[in-house]
Amino acid sequence: MPGSRTGRPPVQRAVKRPAAPRTRSENPLLGLYLRAHRAWDRPLTAYYLILGGSLLITVLGLVMVYSASQITALQMSLPGSYFFRKQLLAAVIGAVLLLVASRMPVKLHRALAYPILAGAVFLMALVQVPGIGMSVNGNQNWISLGGSFQIQPSEFGKLALVLWGADLLARKQDRKLLSQWKHMLVPLVPAAFMLLGLIMLGGDMGTAIILTAILFGLLWLAGAPTRLFVGVLSIAATLGVILIKTSPNRMARLQCIGATEPKAGVADCWQAVHGIYALASGGLFGSGLGASVEKWGQLPEAHTDFIFAVTGEELGLAGTLSVLALFAALGYAGIRVAGRTEDPFVRYAAGGVTTWITAQAVINMGAVLGLLPIAGVPLPLFSYGGSALLPTMFAIGLLIAFAREDPAARMALSMRQPRFGRKRARGPVREPRRWNTMRRRASAARSSGER
Image 1 (cartoon, helix red, strand yellow):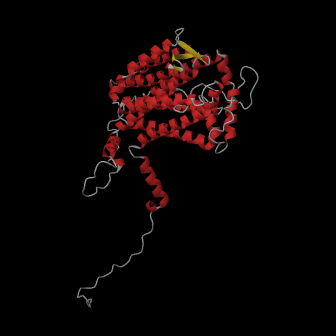
Image 2 (cartoon, helix red, strand yellow):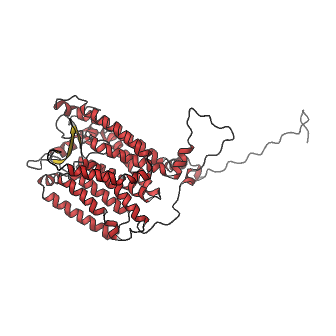
Image 3 (cartoon, one colour):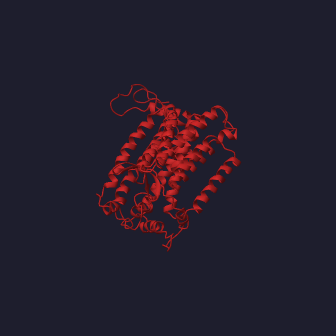
């Protein structure tokens, strides 16, 4: 073989091979799906969903409270930003509570269960004392703190039931007692009925429904047998029917489901109908922020229970679907935290908080849409009301703390390096680890009392 001019042997070029046919794994759409699935399955997904979703809901709620409450404040001869400033103050205090709760260890959360329950029961009983308790919209469930500040103790009863019930069921599961029906019901159900009785003394049916949902959520997570679950549900449904039948106001609310025109008589359905009018006039993208017509005295409680209707009128279908998607992401993240933990307290507490927030959001939105009776419950993190916002943000802090306690999430957080202030170590770049291999799997089979 002749040599080259430099005396070196000629370089032999590799023979080109025909390109291999594209496999299914190289499909662009399939690759995009796989990348999205891997990103969704990372250990910090629940952490970011809870933190980001709750903050977005709170910020958007502040904007809508400012927009929906201006006319109400002016009608009461108050500054237009009066309700917004109070809600902003509550949000700042709630952010501090969220940060504290997210940094607290699980043992401290369990230690606070009994003090929070005792404090909630004391305040809820104090509401019925003449001269201390206040009546708002026919419900005796408020305590005046002086000036324009009030507190609704029943909102803190939700947090108390979640923490105390989770601690109780976790201790009984550690002792293998949840397989006996009496240990599953006592003292959880009697204590929940005591809270429900204190709430119903003030006539607050909406909060009682949320507490009942939390109770059923805890029993479901504890693996209550079907006959036991149906029995407790039947008792609660019977009591609910009796309370509704004996109250003309509650019967009137029940008759307003699906109403599209105001009626004459006790069940005039004015609020329900004008809520539908607000949603219908919003269209796809709404009339514009601050341009609502129904908030000019036509829609009662525009900045509290029916703020979702004003959102639909001003931001349209796009705005309401965005709020719904944020609550759906928050609910998914809570279920994910509860399903991936091995700590029974974390599972019960995360499941209880998720049940609380999602059930309250569904009841509020269902009432605005005319699918459910008006229960008088605010939209979590969104409606005006500091008494509802503070315990809810503390509960969100619980979920964040539980999401951080996952071993894979803790390792991922510890591996993160700040962008500024610290030099990266020199050396060969290591291949990033697959997050799926860091997920902890339960090695032992769950007991018969778990699901």
